[in-house]
Length: 90
Image (cartoon, rainbow, N blue to C red):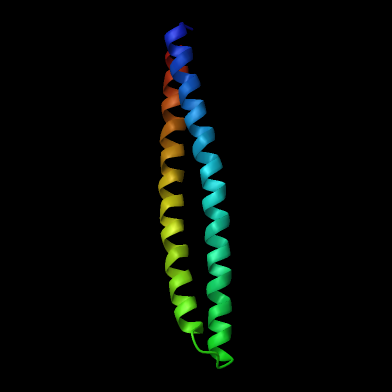
C-alpha cells in the first residue's frame, strides 16, 4: 500500500472518529431536550404557566439536534464506504 493511500485512509479514519464523537454528544443533547420537553408538558398538565413554551421550545431544539445527528450518520456512512473503496484498491 502506498504512503499516499495510507495517508488518505488515515485522514478518513480520523474524520470518522471525529464525527462519531460529535454524534454521541448530539444524541445525548437531543435526549436531554426531549426529557425537558416532557417535563414542560407535565408542568402544563399540572397547571403551571410556561410549561407549554418550555415543551415546544425544547422539543424543537431536540428535533434540530436529531437532524444534525442524522446528517453526521450519513457522513460517517459515506466515509466508511470511501475507506472500503480505498482499501479495495490497495
